[in-house]
Image 1 (cartoon, rainbow, N blue to C red):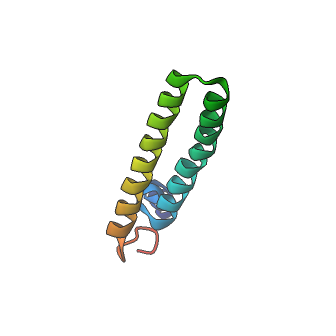
Image 2: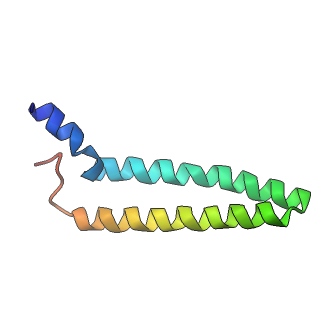
Image 3: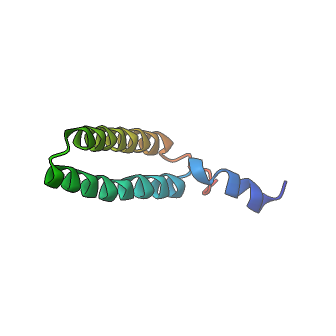
Length: 80
């Protein structure tokens, strides 16, 4: 396996990969905000509950990614 391919496979476990994952997860929050706004405007309780649950999932996902980023510390695969 070439060195470049090996680095590409390790991208998700690198600091850069974690930042990309965090950004894409946080981008989902924009959609949730729109869902919450629409649900409130329509007074749709079920959609509001769904959007809230999704927001909690996004927050949890970001917390997990942040924890993994802290664990990476100095042993970043791409720097290796």
